[in-house]
Image 1 (cartoon, rainbow, N blue to C red):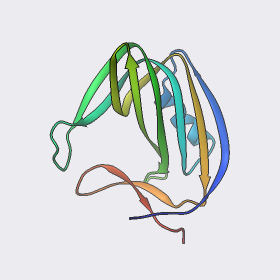
Image 2 (image 1 turned 135 degrees about the vertical axis):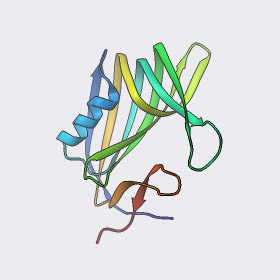
Image 3 (image 1 turned 30 degrees about the horizontal axis):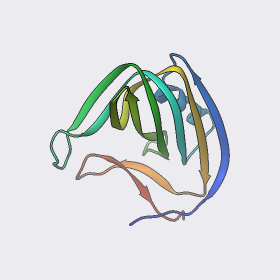
Length: 149
């Protein structure tokens, strides 16, 4: 187990409009606001997107299984923010999307284009020492946490 203790910093409410990609817009926003660690909660709808819905086989390192969706899907989810080894923020998103009786849950990757509106609540954490680094065994970028020195 690893942990790092911190405090709640700034809180942002962000509105994404039709056609904006949540992955692109929020990456830029986090860089512009100089956020080092935090959490994102979001809800709304996506025109189209791509999710990792698990591994192709339960092996380590995993080979991700992708699902592509389009046509207007409801969405809610969350993301965590840590800096990578290069000092740039890395946001790890997980979400559930649904349309009719179809539902997908997984890790948002590559594309998440807003349909009408996505509302985002971003909470900044201060005093947290965390980096998202590639685990050499799994190949997955994992948060590495410790008390700040």
